[in-house]
Length: 87
Image (cartoon, rainbow, N blue to C red; front, side, top):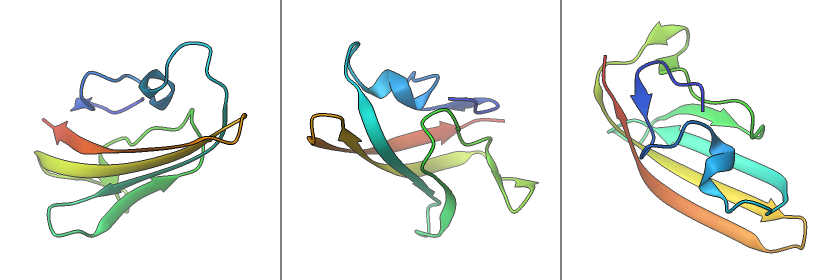
């Protein structure tokens, strides 16, 4: 995950959230701020959050992510967790 000075539980890109060999068909990734406002959304596994919202750097804080992926075999995977943004 391309996140400037952002740590997603040690994950560098969204594909690392899945075991090697799994085939991801579709993905939906959302990042929320502390107040629950959506600050980032993507459906592209190769696009990560850069720590910005509306072109401005977000402050150092803990953010929440929700990730839903559909695998090529039809299985749906849901993950939720925290992102620590440190500048």
